[in-house]
Length: 374
Image 1 (cartoon, rainbow, N blue to C red):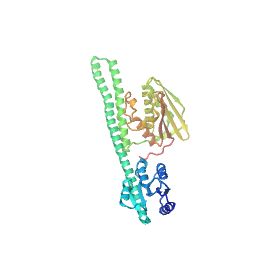
Image 2: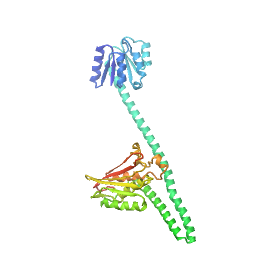
Image 3: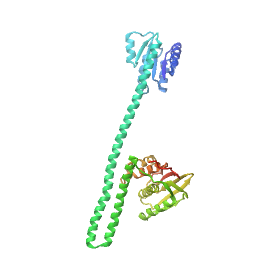
Image 4: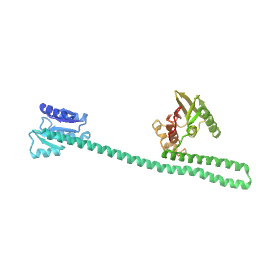
């Protein structure tokens, strides 16, 4: 928008008409004081400013405008019928003007100058947008690099832990075998097996994330009962965590067309996380319901909970809540993989949680997610 400032009404009207005929949006002010009030409220690309005005003259107005951070990039063209000497023209430039035109005004020349300023403004705005986009992209590369480095460090530590444990148990097994202590051998074998299972899960997660990144995560979809799947999963979880009571609320009562193994993977991830982040508790709830042609399944715990501002981030790749990462092991990719599996089934994933009051991680899947095209 252009602001014309002139104390002579006929000058304002004639110049406004010419600019509007050329599709410029125009505003007017009949004094320096009025112009300053408008500059504070509105944004202008260009100000055409009369020099000789009662009260504040054009130079004073320009100097005042240059002090406004909002209007620092606004171009100013001075118009003057009286002050045509070199010293006034010089003062016009020094007070913030980009051009100084003497009256009577050649409208064709003024229009060319206005169009030039507009073109410069548009180019400048595009350059600023490009610069911002580049800076944002650079910052995103830096953040990705930091996350990658952090993930490599965490993965190395997490993989080393079960390996070290297995190595220790194997040494103890050797000694127990030599002594013929069969009960101790069985005990050490059991503990080594637990550590090997952890290692297997970590490697499986790493392979899954690699497949997701390369677009090679395959799905084998078929019709199955999600209620039966839940029965099986609850049995598996209960065997490894007998101290936890898993309460089932609701049933689906319908078959779902999806990848059974991958859906099971998501449910197990939600359940193991619920147990992991619920120290001092012994109850988990599975809430299942059929809502139209969609399945809702939520796993509710009564553990540490998550701050609302972090709800969206927990499904990000490599994300680990700082406070929990100190106390709980993990690569920070289980929920990311689960979210990708659900999204690839045309579903949605989310969490309802309050800090200190537990969490309910849930997914919503259509009864029929269609044929996988990969």
